[in-house]
Image 1 (cartoon, rainbow, N blue to C red):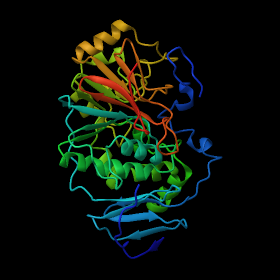
Image 2 (image 1 turned 45 degrees about the horizontal axis):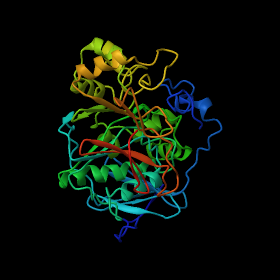
Image 3 (image 1 turned 120 degrees about the vertical axis):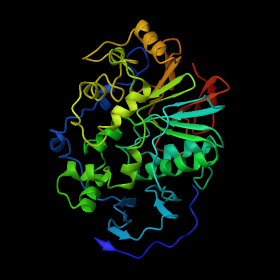
Image 4 (image 1 turned 30 degrees about the horizontal axis):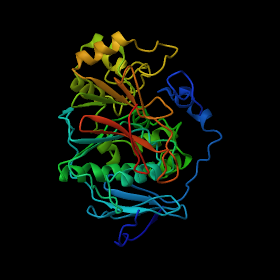
Length: 390
């Protein structure tokens, strides 16, 4: 590992087939499990090597980054100006300032004039940044430009892609800037954020396993990845402050969904967040039946029954869905997690599905999200096209 002088400050660069009658992609391709016993076999063919610029990783007040020549280097930290370089052909870059603390967000919010929603970016910086720019959420320097609007990220912004760290730092930056403009960024955690808390590296690009081993000096892939998302990590601490579920106006936002069995536990939305947070960094403790349910296949991270049936349960009925909405005094649930062909609705508009296959190229109509504005819902994309949600 090489130690270098701090980076000089310079200007930021400018930035499946359809099945199951509900136009859902096969969920088998994204089916995951908390079981890590088969991780080594799952990565036998994965190249575990550094692969271009990455980082920064801030661990215990020490900054690490990976250079274009695949060297892990360290430098001192300028907390007000930390360079983030993107591993793409445009060589995008931006600066971020460290926050002083990470307060837990509220669970419920009043309905703002405008809310934009996107989910399941999975380390795809090109899709994410161009979507935000096209819809005037950020400017060309990656600064918040959405005023008092709200941006909701419905989980799974990590894994699979090659710019996971850069995506997280952009969210981190906007999280702070939105509040300075009386806006709000809501980062709802998904199952893949939780998997990384636990060191489940099955869906990590190989370079993230390698850098985790280099930084942590831990040989175990699982323990090394877990270390990168631990409380020793700046991003790990920040992520651990985020919620599992939030309610904005009459809309509930949750990554996977809410199953009928949830009502058996008589939990408030705030209860779900408080209890779930207890296990962010330890999947077995504290031992508790309710926690076991929340982290199980019918819990909010994993449940797919609002869209499809699974081997362990049927698709939810209209009656059970109405019971959930009535209990939480909501009219609609917005979800990611289960892939669909387009941002679309189910159950007469009571379910809004947002997990689409985003493009890896910037500014195309394949990268899509949801706009809620003046009590109307629209599908928007990374070309700034706006269509009424069907």
